[in-house]
Image (cartoon, rainbow, N blue to C red; front, side):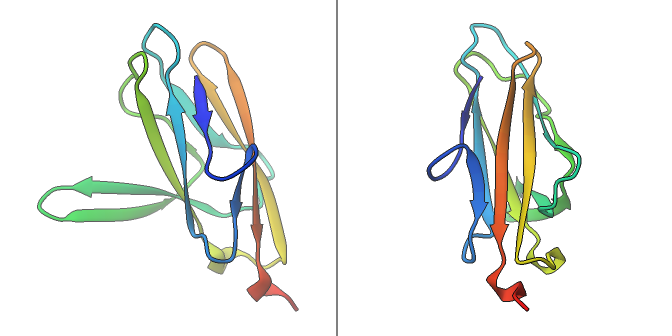
Length: 123
């Protein structure tokens, strides 16, 4: 499993002008696999899972995020994207941090640090 994060480093950094970020998960195994993305206990960053349904019109929904697994297996070489949005109105501190855990069905585990600076929350 290969994890692609936006920007530099091993974390998600929701800056003042960034509301949504995307995580790319690519299956580098020769066999199909699935993965689970979950918020680690004590996570202070309020996130929503962004889902897009494309019919005649594109409908975007935001659901409170606790965990996510794709509905189908990822074939070898296949990429799956997960979009997360920060819920700024739920932040009361100047800076909040958290940890996401990505685990595949082979037992591989990856952690991603997340941070949200909240200058509009300064006292």
